[in-house]
Length: 53
Picture (cartoon, rainbow, N blue to C red):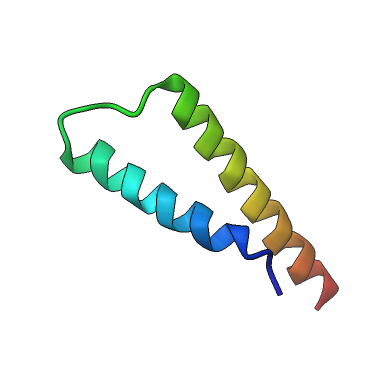
């Protein structure tokens, strides 16, 4: 139903969130922008599927 790359996006985003929430280092603006772009892509695809059904 969804592209396989989303699985890897979600795993990486969870790891980064855990690092940001519980670690001592921030992820940086560049990485945050990349993750936000991926999140937007995922939400967009989910929206398309909802509209189809």
